[in-house]
Each structure stands twice: as structure tokens, then as C-alpha cells.
Length: 635
Image (cartoon, rainbow, N blue to C red):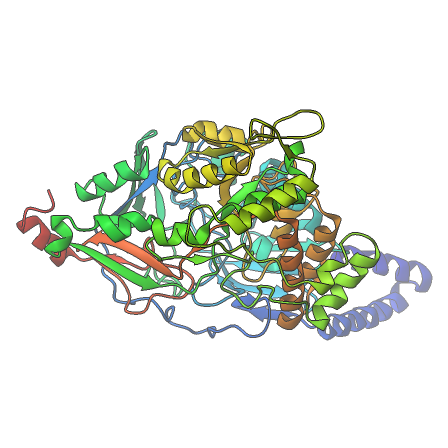
């Protein structure tokens, strides 16, 4: 655009002043333009932070939490649940294999010990003005896809255009709102210009996080990002597709010619020769497979298994390590999620009544061995969680929404909604009475048969859709409590393929499921996918189908925050309103990692706070593995 403006100025000056005078005038005009360009501050950096400074300097030698001398070799083998029939993780169609995006890299990459920071990976530097209205990425000329072809700015532009036209509907809807244009300035220089009227704080990192596809490969293979595919993506990453037994196992192998293996940000990482995932129908089968050595690394998510079943001989004689490692990560938001599209679940009193009947305290002591803590907030285990009554700063954001009738006045005078507490018995009588009163008030009255009906004679029914048999022991007592309340409740177990189909657009055929109430620590435009009205009918994240004008407005406030303090206040206000919507029955979390593995792996002395990092930070110990073979543990 600048070249075009210069040419137009030159023609105009020549027409008015003639050739000689025009030459002098043009020199003055260009000199003035140069001064103007210099006056526009442009930040050139090795990374970018949402707020404040980057933790790592431009000349850092390796990440602070890695072992820079970690050996290379061996295999990390893990398990995955169910089955898979696709290698395309960017489509709502099919079941994508574990790790099926591992070969793709993005221009920027985050770290596991820093919130809100991204560093150059595919780029050497990025350039942007203080208002972040555009960003230029200077790509490293040495970057290669795994087939040896160069990755260029044209691939970046193609990737953006593909994701904005073919990506998941909720994602591309938000992406299209943000980006005005993508320009290839030269083969290794690409510019994103952002639209006016959309907050720019997170946008350089948003576009810098796009997975980069190979235009030539994608076109030659006639790939379609919207479809289920068994053609693997070609990427520039340290790992590439090796082989699979479709539906049963998949293996990725380290690229020996990986272009970025010596980058400081990669030192001490990507240490395994192969990454393997073995599929099992359920957690019980997977645990038996681990005991038999079918795979050798396991993240344990079952408190019962962790507390009772790691007593087999390999653990007792030290051949399998059982280890608890600290985690500072935000809680995952795991919860029972209501489908607000269902007519009988649209009354918040009904949802509140149902929530009262889940007895976490009894479940934690009876089923979970007291190992879990309750989730209350979408941002649980962070400073962003709303607490007690609104602060004056929160109230300043909430009151206009109250005045417009978008929120009840009680949001200003009542504490943030907390998960209900229960007594030691499975059926808490006090909560049963509260829930009964709420359902009576909502018009669901108990009949002579003990069932609740509305004025049309319809029975209040609730089906728990479940694809994880290990959850039966949690859901079944909950169902019993709901039956005692007069609800016709039942547990419906289905296979993973059915579950996937029934919980996604266009079916959304469920009453209540176990899912996650999503968020990131420093939340931004992704909230529109998680909770925004615009994408509620197509989103794979907004499974509850939440449509709230108040939530939409607060999401915009969060995205527009200019400082960490403003973001914290806005996020607390949003958290308060989301919790008041009662679209979930929050479950539990633990601030630690439970891992078990055959004693053939090593990890850094200090695990970073925001990731376990087994795929990238851990390594294979050949000497320990040989000792296991000598003992007959490995075959």
C-alpha cells in the first residue's frame, strides 16, 4: 500500500509542477514520509507477552525447566480410549487419532512456566506496533516440512485461508471477525492486518498460533479440512506420522532431519525416537494392558485405581514407578453439563435442583478416597476466580447489565454461586428438601406414583449420556438421588462413536454429559467459541448451548482489557455470571499429576507448573531399560 501511495503522489506532483520542480518536491515528500514512518514505533522482538515483559531474553540458550543434556532415543508408549477412524483433528466428522496434529507447528509457541507469553518458533522475530493493529512474522529461511520442502509465507497465508474457510465452524467464525488481510511480503515475511473494532491485545498470538499446513502437499493430496481423513497432515514438526493399525494403535517417529532440533527453544525436548498410542475400549482394559507391558507410561485419572490397584508385583519390586508430581495448572472445569436446548432444562430452578442432588462430599470420601477438591469456578485454582460479593470494580461492570435487564439485581448483592455441599450420607435430606421446593416452584409436582409432572402431564426425565464405564460408579448414586427427588433419571452408556455423534452438531441429543467448562488462564477471543451466543448452535466447545447477551457483553470486556488488573476484574465478573447461569454441576480436580511408568524414563528434577510434558520433556533411559530386559520385565 505504501508503494501505491508513493506512485500516486509522484504522478500528481509531476502533473502540477513539471519535471524539474516535481523531482525536488518528490524528494521532500519522500523525506517527510520517511520521518512519519520512523515516528511510528514498531516493536521487533523474539516473542510477545499479553501483559508485561517476556521472561526469557532474546539470547536464552534453553528453557529453564528442561534437561539440556537429555539423551535421545527409545519409545514413549501411552494409551488412548475408544477408537479412531481419522487423522484430521480439525473436523467435527470422525474420531481423530491421538496426536494427529503433532506434526504441525505454529509460528509462535508458548512455554510451560509462563502465562500469556509466546516465543518465536517458525519465525526469527516478529514486528508489531504498540496498538497491535498488525503483525509481521519474519520466518526462518531454514524451516522445512518433513518431506524437505521449504515452509514459506505462502504456506502461512494458505493455512489461514484454509482454517478461515474450512476449520471448525465456531473457530472460523471468530477468526473471520479478527483478520482484515494476510499479505505475503516476500517468501519469508508475512503480514497480518487486523480489523478495526475488534480488540487487538491477543491477536498477534492468535494468528501466530495457527498450525501451518503445506500448501503443495494439501493440494496434491486433495485434502479437505472439513472431512474425516486417513491421510496424515504434512508438517514441519519434530515428529511425523509413521504407521497405524486403524482404530487400534498409531505411531509417530522423530524426524532425524528436523530443521529446528538445535533451536534454543527445542534444546532438551523431543527426546523420544517414537511416540506410540495404544487404544483400549475402557480404562479397566487399559490398566490391565499397562500391567502386561502393552504400553509403558500411564497418567492415572481414577482415584480408585490409584488408591487400590497399584499393588501388582512390578510396582512392589520397583520395576514400575508410581509417582505424584505437582501441578500449578488451572483446574480443567470438569463437570456435568446440561443441554440448555432441551425444553425441560431451560428453567434454572430445575438445573439448580438437579445440582443439589449430586453429593460430592460423600462421593469424595466413599468413591475417591478423599483425594479430590471441589470445582466451584470456571477459573478454579487461579486468581481469576470470583469470590464472595462483587468488588466495586466488578460491580461497575455488572450494574449496567442489571440496569438493562440482562442480569438479575441479585448478581450485585449475593455471593458468587458455589457448588452445593452435602452431608456424609449419599442422600442429603436437607438438599432433597431444597431441591423439592425448587421443582415445586418450577411447576414440576410429585404425583401419586412418585414422579414429577408439569401441567401438561409430562414426566420430568433426565438421561445421563456416558461413554466411560468407569464413571458408572459416580453417576449411579447420583441417579438414585434424583429418583428419590421424583425425577425419572437413568444412565445411558454408549460407545465412543455414538457419544461423539450425539453430543455434536447437528444432533446435540443428550440431557446431561460429563464435559469441560472451558477457559484459559488469560482468556481472550476463544471465549466466543466456549460461551458466545453466535456460535452456540455449531460449537464443539459450547456443548451446553449457552446464549446469554450478558455473557456476550462481558466476553467483549475481557477481550478488551488493557492490563492484567483489568483482565482479572473482567474475568471475575464473567465467572460470576457464568456460574449464575447454572449450566453445570461442577465436579472435582487435583493439583497434582498421578503417573505410573516402567522404570525406563527420566524427567527434569523440577516439573514446570503448567504442563507434565511427558512427550517433550521426558526421555528414555537406555541403561534402565536394559536392566528391565535383563530382569525379564521387557520383552
